[in-house]
Length: 106
Image (tube, rainbow, N blue to C red):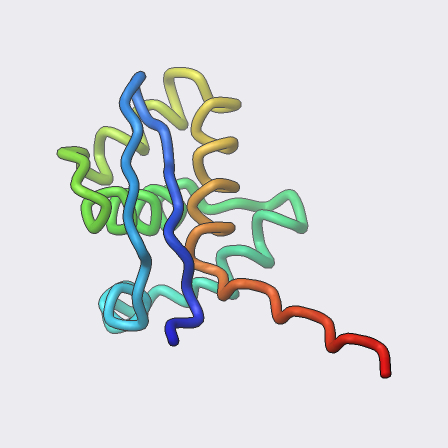
């Protein structure tokens, strides 16, 4: 059983449904980008646009989107930053393991 679940992410009016994988996470972190560090930076209000764009692009590409990190960075820096931040939240949720179900009370 996978720790990941099927998820749908929307970008530019199109939905992308996929199941993230550990291979995807390794491919991001093998590039020297710590997903947890980037998430911490975002939570602290100090996001690094280039790293966020890289993570978003990698996940979206794995989902089948034809998007580059330059596309994402451009939208973040000169376009609709709120849209990209919402997308980042969707991406982070998608690559987070499914929550464990609580044990039934005895």
